Length: 377
Image: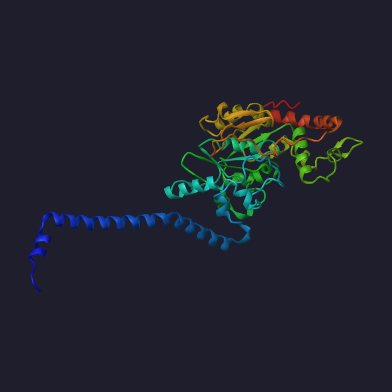
């Protein structure tokens, strides 16, 4: 091959060499950038697909009993529903997927953020709202979730009354991830009237803090009945369920709506396993009239800074109860759902008075036990 002077002159030029080198470097840089963008764009789906694969495998192992716990952990039940009964509020096992997916986007973002940072871990609850049904437990839980140091599972786990045989690890898996200094909470109102619950919670941890929202037992019983009536319109009248014998005026204490309100009796059972200083009794009435005041007491009880104050609430005149100016994870005001504040049926005043007379000695004993006068008489 012959040597070309022209070709030699072109390649020997320093400027041409630099241009060629820069061109090659530019092409390499573009190729690397393109490759990186293509890889990074697939990362979220890879993570999600991997996670979903693990969830599917877990479901295959656990079968129908676990009910897809991993997917439920990344979702909350529909917030702000005044559903506090054993037969109406969804539990972890029975809640429908649609209900649990209401706030899925918000929790998915939280879960992915925690996953990517590797921060947080699932812990057994350090505090539990144990009762009472139709006392205001849903409102209290939603108010508390505004606090940055509180993380709570939304659906009622019913672990210590219905699902205890599943074990503590099953229970732990239901809990949201928490960081150092945050408190894990759950609420299941039926615990307060479940005989085995105190011993079982004590076996988990004797340091568990217990919160009980109580309400005038007569009003609570009527509210309980109203909720049942909305589900089963053909049930007997409140009056006929209240009495064993209307003529003698003997109250039927086997009816759950009446039995739940005998707070002193149920508290006796809890005091066999926990000292009084580990229980906090929240007034359901003051939770409506002075939510910030009651939330202040709860935050003190939990050892948290008083972050939830008057500025978080406004009173909704139409609904007749306080609402949050900004709910957890939202910039919009939010009130309890349409099931809150049902209109109570008209009850014979004589029946109401008979119930007040029945509850009075139990109320007085409860005041003495707790050191609080709730003013129900």
